[in-house]
Image 1 (cartoon, one colour):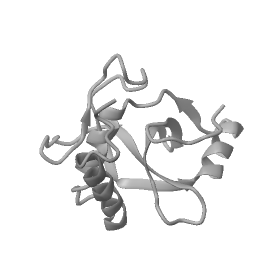
Image 2 (image 1 turned 90 degrees about the vertical axis):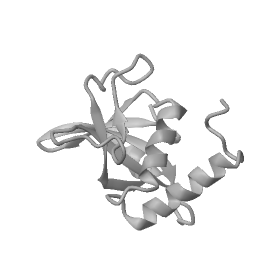
Image 3 (image 1 turned 135 degrees about the vertical axis):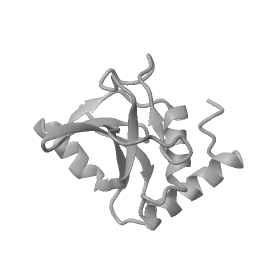
Image 4 (image 1 turned 60 degrees about the vertical axis):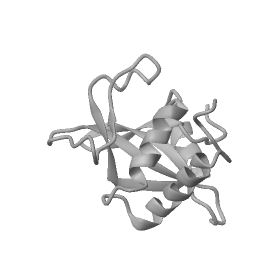
Length: 143
């Protein structure tokens, strides 16, 4: 059962009429409560643009819920307080899945930092994270 939230945690969340995998991609700074930015994956029914879209293909190191080519839906990014996420999992409304490996989270963050579909406040958070990674202070890629 989830007690801590970390970047890369993933959850199956009911999104009527179906359900989607949401991935925690950032801690929202300067909030009085611990709040986490999450984006979801969906099967793309439109033309995928590799220059703008973050594409996730099934792979052995990803949750088996990702069973077809999917894209990140930046326009539906959400944030939740830690206690709400934990409550949703404990109640059974959300299902915690495997943690997404850092190299995938980095790609989601990197593309999100320039996505016009993502709200400016979230893009700015991701830009700061990417800047920190690129100067080596928080490198996910050196793991």
